[in-house]
Length: 371
Image 1 (spheres, rainbow, N blue to C red):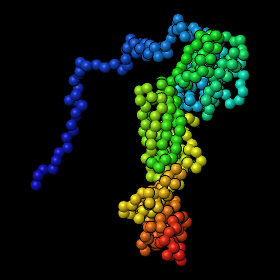
Image 2: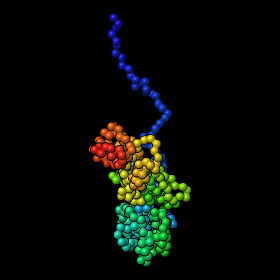
Image 3: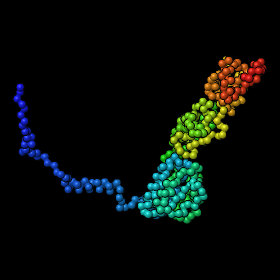
Image 4: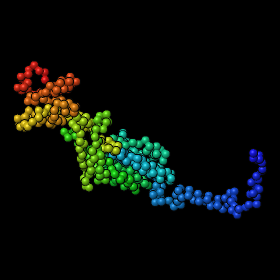
């Protein structure tokens, strides 16, 4: 048997005694390094604050009364966030010098007497936060008339425009120039409007108008009365075109449900066009007997010519037209009805369908037949 193990103490700490390292580290950074870091942080804070011993020309101009003119009609709605940002920036400039702010809107909801009340920067910001674009166009001529009734002069005028030109804009610009130096803020892209829309046999057609500074392309969508999208199409403006059109290709039974067209992604009253009441053309199916026929002696030829201005028409077999959800079916007398089609028509009529049949020899020979 092996001898029992002996226990011996191992003093590892004694092996480390006498060892030393030339590398030393301080418990805290030296005072000059702490001072350098604090100075660098202070300089960064001061740089971000943008201090200025000499006010900029814009700040000097804002040393007195400030007039803020805002186009708040529907034409400003697509760029409303930029309008608010520009207004708040102008108010902030006036706030630095303690100048009063006067507000003039070009599309007020009620007859206004502005600008009449001098606002503090805080009150002006509150009004801008509550201001919303109106669903009508701005009346700049009325704004010019209201401003002309006062004899007030201003040290700085900021006109936040919708970027669109009209005779009222020139009148307002002339009156503003008489009241003080004017700075105009205009958006890079102006609002667009749907100027026409109609349901046609080929789908839904619409035309869009833009200003010279409007974006060169857009997408339009057809929607039902409850806001469900039916289809969309893209339109492009030529380099010098102010109007462009597009057709949303839809089957007649779907196009008949269209209630409005809109510019996709643009929130304004002008970006939506309601289709006229009754423009949802009924979808009528013409049961085609098949085979070649002479147009001028065909029963469907005259039905097609008579209904084309008022309905979306489609020719096909009984099964095809029922599956396409036709609202009414027209059956010429010359069309034979197979037993299968007869059963399908009976079920369709029992469910509320409308069948219009031409009278002729075939119908006369089956006088007791309800079909």
